[in-house]
Image (cartoon, each protein chain N blue to C red):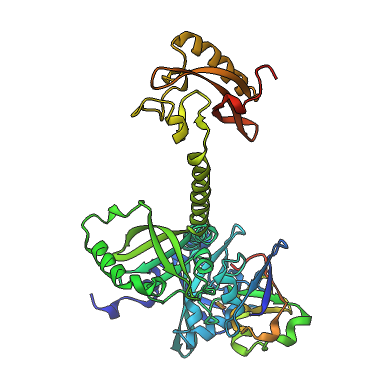
Length: 383
Length: 106
Ligand code: FES
C-alpha cells in the first residue's frame, strides 16, 4: 500500500502514543485514541481547548500553550529533556507528561503535540535517586575514610572523612592520582604492589584483609593507616575502593603501652624480693627472677597453678587449704600477709614473709601480686 | 569560603562553606542537602534547584536573566523571592546568606 493511500487521520489514530493536532490558540482539531486512554475518557477530546487537560495548575506562572508554541520552534531546547507538563485526568488526578511539539502548515499554522506519560519513569527515578542518596549519605557519614580510584588509579571519589584525614578541601582529591597520597619513599614499591594487585587472579586476597600502609597528607605529614581494598566491576568499569582508618591514635596508645610495660618490667625484674603476678583463678601470669630463684632451675611457671609450685610445704593439701583461704580473702579485696615455711630448691626449709595483695580495676579484681621477703624485714606475725 | 545556610521547608538548617565561584546549587548538591535536586547540572533547563532568597540577601546576588525567569515558570510554589540556585554564583560578599528551599522540586 502506498503511504498516500493512508489518510492523515488514520495515521494519527494508529499512533500508539497520545497525540493531537491543535490550532495556535490550543483548539484541538484532531486527537487519537491513545490520548483518550491517557485521559481515561471514552472518546478523544475534540472541539475543546488543550488547556482543559494541560492547565496551569499550581505552577501559576506557567502558560503551557505558550511553551508548546515555543518548543515547536526549538525542538532541541535543552529543557525538553527535563521539564514536564501536568496533565489533568478526567477523574481529577494529575499526571506528569513529557511533551514534544511539531509545527504543521496547512493553510494556517497547526501544532502536532505528542504526550508521554512519565509517571512510572518519575517513580523509578525517585526510587533510584533515594537509593543513591542513601548510599551517598552513608559514605559521607562514614567515620572511615573511603577513597575510590578507577582503573588508571585516578581518584574518582573521596568521602569527607578521607578529605579530613588527608587534609584536603571539599572535592580537592577528585582527579588526583592515587600516588599523590603515597609517601615518596614508598612510591615505587606501591606501584609494583598495585600492578601485582591488578594482575592477581584472586584480588580477593586483599579484600577484607586489613593491611597497614603509610600515606602522606596534603601538608606532607606521613600517617600510618589501616587499609582494606576491594575491587568492584560495574558495567565493565573497574573501581578500586579503599577503606582507610587512621592508626595514629592506636599507634600512640600501643607505644605508650609498650613504654609502661617496659618500665613495669624494669622494676619487676630487678626487685630483690620474690614477686609473682597471679590471675584471679590462681595461675601464674608473671614471675620475676628473684622468685624463680626459689624454684628448681628450668621449672615451668607461666600458666601453671601457683599453689602447685614446688616451693610450698611438703604436704600439698595443707598448702592448698591456706592458699585457697588467702586467695579467697584477696578476691574480697583484702590483702593477706603471714610468715610461711617454704621449701628451697636444695630441699631446705626457709621461713619467709609472704603476702598476697589484690589488684582491682573499676571495682573488679583482675590479678593478685604475691611477694615473699626475708623475715628480718617482716612485721612480726600477728602484728 | 563564605558560609551559606540552607533551610529546608521544615526548618532544618544546614550551614555549609561554599567555595567562591561555584553556585548555590553546587554547594547544596555537593553536600547532599535534601531539597535541591539540580537535575540538569546547572544548565538552567530543569528548574529543580528552585530556592527563595529573602529581600535582605537579594542585593548580594546577581539578578535573574530572561532564561532563568522563563524556567522558573516550571517550578512549584513560585514566589517573588524565587530563584534558580544554579544561576547564583557564590561570592565572598555572600557570607552568611540564607537560602530557603521549597517543599518540593517536582
Ligand atoms: S540545576 Fe537545573 S535549572 Fe538549576
